[in-house]
Length: 152
Image 1 (cartoon, one colour):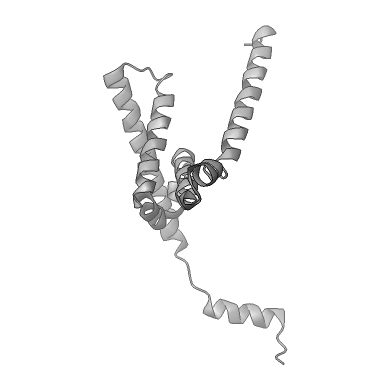
Image 2 (image 1 turned 90 degrees about the horizontal axis):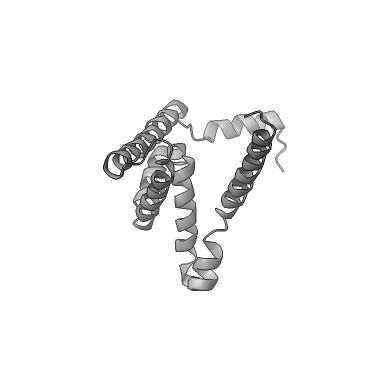
């Protein structure tokens, strides 16, 4: 039987541990995340120029478009390759949400459309929807109260 102390084990484990390029990973995440956001800004400009949206109203169609594009790219396996390269850079909330929804649907499609796709599609994204809607309700309630009190 081998008697190894905790410090000996840590030293042995660090010897065989894979070294991760932290700065390179951070740079990749920053650049890809920035490109996703810049692409979203281009979509906003497109909607404002061609469809007469304003800065206040362009957010919803832009978000929907990014989610749709992410779902298409995930379905064809492209988004996974981008995510593998960039790591956290593709976890921008909107694109990450679209990826989470469609990935669960793809993973469970063999169980059928109702039991597989329908039941599992929003497993991961369900909490995002729930807390997003709840937070929006609370903020709207607070704003309504502040308006009624004349604060806003």
